[in-house]
Length: 365
Ligand SMILES: Cc1cc2nc3c(=O)[nH]c(=O)nc-3n(C[C@H](O)[C@H](O)[C@H](O)COP(=O)(O)O)c2cc1C
Image (cartoon, rainbow, N blue to C red):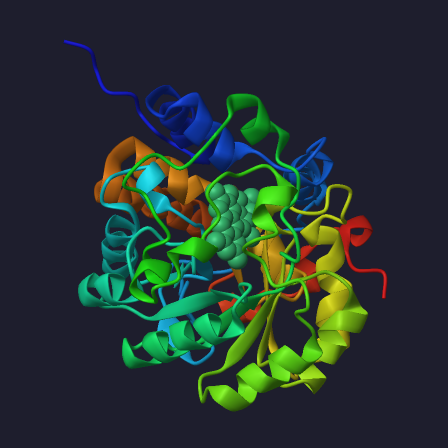
């Protein structure tokens, strides 16, 4: 009898997932665009930053909880919207929703989910947001917002870094296509399956899906259309952060789509401080990209984020063990975050500030 591997951290889950997934599915999840410079830099930037912990603080009682757009969560870690979770495990987004609810963290459901808005709502008992892609038919996009409202999602996350698809060379090399039976389920119900991307990796094929005319007017229209708070995901420039707030956004997600879109774009750890400064408390600021350890979450909060979103690691955990895999990984990262707090002399997430960073890692502004 072989002993199952001990999966201690996000990288262990990735190793396990790589052994279980087809090369095409693994490459689709793991890959970035072109030379994958931004993909690598995302993680490297968190790793390079140094913490400056305090000692001799009574840390025997610690509170990791916070609120995100008013919803209480168990820790400042959110599950980033990732399309087609069924490629990792047949239960897909349902398994993720159950694990997130049991742990008290928030799942952001993708427009491109392999289970529908309603199916996920039916198994989720925790707070959930819906990520909106403005696809080529904006009316279809707005119909998804109505469905999310009706199913108890409490915010809309508009992704704005998808005018065209980044060139994912791993997908082109493996010839990755969606296996039969895995679809963008939400568009099926909206009778718009023809708009769903079929082949990944090629910008030309995706032109049929994405709405390239997306602009600030659409954001304003969306904010008028829904009473739910709207967050804008995919902001890197402080100028855009300011504009997003002026056009009605209540939250900003500093993101480069996990290095899958514009290769060479700035890492999110480097972009975050200037965005936080530009927003100046008028909206909540979030960040994703390369967050792999609880200490990275701590660094993200020290740079001004309210919480960090994590993408690939929960997909690895889903592939490794379905719902219990995601639940176990969430416990691992919670443990890491908890230990990083204690070892930094912190007892509450509200105490995290830039003073936790070594001088060379602090924002220069
Ligand atoms: C396989 C995969 C699918 C993704 N699908 C979406 C999506 O449908 N919508 C979206 O806004 N972002 C999507 N993203 C980007 C994530 O939301 C997030 O920005 C990114 O994964 C964070 O980086 P990390 O994976 O390094 O944590 C996807 C990312 C991956 C890896």
